Image (tube, rainbow, N blue to C red):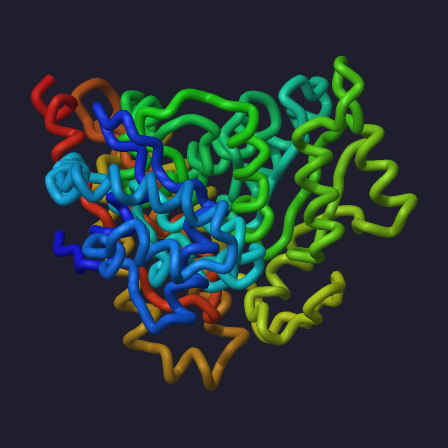
Amino acid sequence: MQFNENQIATYLLCAKLPNAKTPPLTIIEWNELIRALKEHNLEPKNLLGMTPSEILNIGSSKQKMMKMAKKIEDRQKLGFSMMELEELSNQGYKIMFRQNIPKRLKGKIDPKHLPPFFYVIGDTSIFEYLALGVVGSRDANKEEIANTARLGHEAAIQGIVLVSGGAKGIDSTAVDACLNNGGKAIVFPSEGLESWIKRKEIRQYIQNKQLLLISAQSINARFTGAYAMQRNKYIHTTAHAVLVASSKILSSRNTKTGTWSGVMENVQAQWTPIFVQGKSEGVQKLLEEGHAKPFDSFASLLAMAKPNNASKNTNQIVKPESTPFPRQEILQYLRFAKDSGLNEQQVREELTLLMKEVFDNSLEQIRCSEGALDDSNEQLEVLESKVKKNPENKGEGKEIVSPHKIGLNNESVKDTGEASSEQISIEDLLIQDKNR
C-alpha cells in the first residue's frame, strides 16, 4: 500500500510507535497544529523539516507550541514510521487517514476531537450502508438481553448494519445475533484490534465481509476507561440512528455510566435520532424528557435510507419509496435447505436457475404483477421440492450452506450519501486456519 508524505508525517507524529520513548502528539494537539499549518499554507510533511523555532512561530500560544515542538523534534529523529506502516499493511490492517473517514462521522464530531487516523480491518464498504447504533449496559437483565438478541437477528434480516462498542452485555449480544444470522456490523472496540483478530470467528466474519473493526488506538492497546468513553462519539456519529437497549444513569461509584454519558452527548450535539426499548431508568428518562422515541420496528430506520432527506435535528422520518427486499422469506428457505443437508453448490445452482427465470421474464412480470408474485412463490417452492427429493444429501462430509456464504443476507440497505470505500484483505490472517 502506498502512503504519501503527509500521511507518513501524520503517522510518525501521532502514532504510539514501538520502542519509542517520545509520546505522540495528542488528538487535541494535532488538531491545533493542523489549524496553525493551514493558516501559514503549510502541510504536515513540512513539519519533518522544520526547526523548533520555526514551529514556535506558527502557533498562537507559545506555551502549547513549545511542548509540541519538543515532541516533533524528538519524533523527527526516529524516521521509521514508513517501515511500521508497511508492516501493518502486510498484517492486513489499514490506516484510514482523514480524507477516507466517512463524511457522517467526520462531519458531526467537533474537529478538535477528530483523530488524525483510525486503524481498520475489514470491509470498509460497510460504511456505505444504513446503520443502527446499539448501546446499553454491560449488566443488562435477561429480558433486555433477549430483546436485544431478537433485534440483532431482525437487523440481519432487514439488511441493517449494527454499530457497537463490542462490550459484553447489550453490545456483544446485538452484534453476535446480527453476524450469526448473516448480517453486517461495525465495532469500535475499547481495546486494540490485535486482541480481536486472534479469535477465529472474528477473522471468519471479516473474511465474509460482514465485520468492520475500527479503532483510534494502537493495535495492541489495552482497555482504558478514557478511550471507552471517547469511542462513544464514534458509535453515535457513525450510525444513522441509535437504539438505547438498556441504561443505568449512575454507576455504583455514583458517577454517570458510560452508556448514559454517550447518549447525553448525542442529545446535546443532536448527532443522530435516538430510539429506546425496555424499561430501564435511562430509557424512561429519555422518553419523559422527549429525547427519544420508542423502537417498535425497523420501518422508521428503513425510511431513513436517504438520510439527506431527513430533518437534521429531529426524529422526522421520510416515507420509504419502495417495499423492503423480502429477506426473511428467502432466509427461511435457505435455512430449510441447510437443515435438510443440501450442500452449497446445489443451492447455488438452484438459485441461479431461479434468478434466470425471474430476470428473463422481468418484462412480463411488470405487466402482470399479481401473476409475478405467484410465480415467485412457486419458484421458492421448487427449492423446497428439490430438498425433499434429496434425502441422501444429509449426513457427515456434506458441505452445509449458510446464509452469509451465499451472500443473500448481506445485501444491506445502502446509504447513498457515502462514497465507495476501499476493501481490505486479511488472507494472511487466515492462513493458520486453512492449514489446520
